Length: 499
Image 1: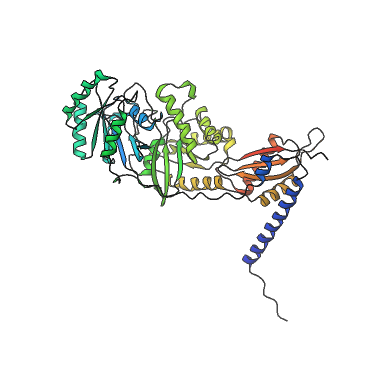
Image 2: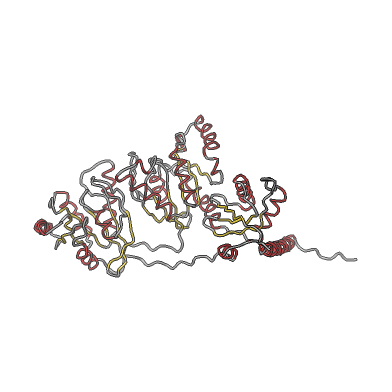
């Protein structure tokens, strides 16, 4: 008698999976049918019809020409940038040296789209942070297709302006001369005097009031080539990562290390970065958009001037990002600012990675206390991947990518409705909701309303206590992963239809 051939283990697994999927689908249909006995509004019905989300198919963006705005400090470059953009984007304050990095913005004029680059003030023979700022301005000129050179017409051409002219001539880039701070006809003579710089016609402009900016932009568009020699073509679908944290934890140093170049101004002075800085970085063959942000200080309403607007832009950068890397200084005690930054990311619904920087500066005693701090202060975000790094040396920076990928995979994850309800059925059977007023709320049906972040809606016959919702979230994470992503669970209490 011959023994029949047994299916291979892989085939058995496939058969089991198919049977489980069929059971889940049967359960889902039964639960949906049971919902007909309850009062449901149009929003409930629309939610129940939510299917699998289609993947976004983004188009390949064109390479835009680059227009850089340069000049010595406090001539109104950022004010002009805001005027061109039509919104208050660049940080502006009546103090020299507010802008420090070169910052790119998408812009449009007369139907032409281009990249506008704001730069820090260029000075000669400076040291320290001012020298780093000047270097960034020089790089901006080298990477631009055309340049708008801003001069303060009320002051006239200075020796520093003449040094910038020599730099511009050496670059051989098309230059449009902006005579700024010409607020009326009386200032026209001041603008005319700038012919002496030898850059052609000076365009009188008041970037504060908008006077003359149209003529300036017309000239800039004439000088700007239609095809860019320096614009960056964005690969399809690079994920956006915001580097956030309190001032001086090493965000800019980490970005420079990842980029492999001195892309962002770094200095021992806390709060060097003020505008969010975007940088396309390729790590392990995968492109990422990294956004370096200003350090979030104690409370936004306690800041003023440039720091106030920088805090608002940091919040905006978090909102535009998909995942945030919160940098903490491992060598120092965790502060209220650190936990507030993490809360901002979670409240914004963004994926999260926590990076403990300056790990090389930590001794054994500090390591012991740090573990206790994490257990006590970060208990609400134990689901976030943790990476120990040194931005200065690059130690363990390669571990950042796997952590980012895990967080984003969780952020994008969708649980099939049948599987979700099977999970909840097993969970409730083993751990029912406690009695409330002699009654026990019953979970009727659940669906995942959206991803990014995962949001679940539970229909129930009564209110589910916060502790039980946290219990459901914890078990969701244990069963389906969701490492590095916040989860939102909302409950809709529905009553039976009156017969």
